[in-house]
Length: 252
Ligand SMILES: C[S@@+](CC[C@H](N)C(=O)[O-])C[C@H]1O[C@@H](n2cnc3c(N)ncnc32)[C@H](O)[C@@H]1O
Image (cartoon, rainbow, N blue to C red; front, side):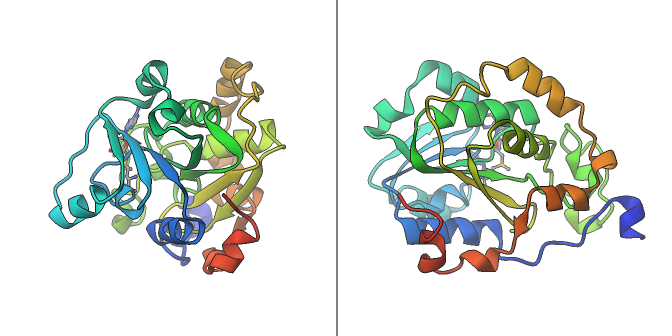
């Protein structure tokens, strides 16, 4: 199939997103970790520090993964949607510290990720890191706002649902030029690392409805997947393999 005509990209060839997350944990040794969207626990298992995970369901099934998940000094699981969690709980009070590393991988719709970012940033320090998943889709069907709504162009991508959180990453770059972004070509659908956070910022929350309207007005067909990746200034994951490479950009 003509990839340009079909608006699809080749698979990314960098290090997988879990490998990049593992390197972040090993190099930066965060004191705590917050995760929105845990599913079967592959990303939660990477944290050795105190961890707080939020998901309406935790379908843990692999005993080896469960052993790694429960080996942390402290583990808090909240079986609920993230909006409800932030309405009812204060993660800093629960962990006794500001958040250091957060991975946002919950509902893959742009307004949900925007709220997750706003709610998480409030509990961070300036040098904390918030990682967004799935903001670099590699073909259009995976950007549908509903899971498995469209068959993939490439059959092996059937379960690579990215939803429309690509919109949130674009919005953040536009509405928050004060943030520092590092966008990586981590398969399958990219990672965006954000730091220089401002927990007191109201630039997103004050104009939330307007930001959602703006995001929903964007079309990935019109922008093009390749142009989106270029606008996001994608870097190879190999730029961030060693502790030294990571710590020149990030520190906790
Ligand atoms: C892609 S999976 C997470 C995968 C996991 N982070 C990993 O890398 O192995 C997305 C998860 O988000 C959860 N989810 C969906 N809506 C959510 C919400 N509103 N709040 C928190 N989690 C949500 C789903 O239940 C699902 O387990």
